[in-house]
Length: 141
Image (spheres, rainbow, N blue to C red):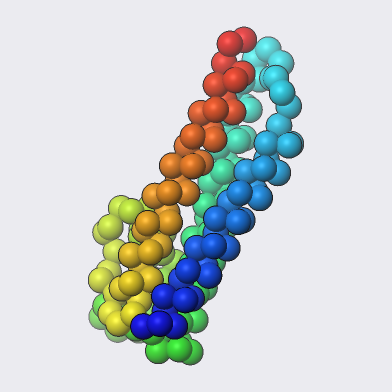
């Protein structure tokens, strides 16, 4: 149990640091103002880049969940039959987005999933605030 908690806390700290760094880098890349008729492209571009940040974080959680079950015996997904890497990716994406339609994990993977959901809601809210702030500053054109 301690190993699972330490592992997920390290992962959350990494996710927060990566999110902070990526949003900062994105902010530096963006122009202060968009030209006429470029607001739509600007908004879509920012949204796609922010989505890429979250997919990267979900992928990191997937790697840790899959590795933890394969090598550290931290639990498994409660799925009939063998579980693939894609099963873990699906579980991670659904947990991160707090949709909650995924399989119920077994063992210490339960606590790791709960922490992923908490991190996901915080990082998604942070991204939404960032997006509306960046897009809102150019909407007066």
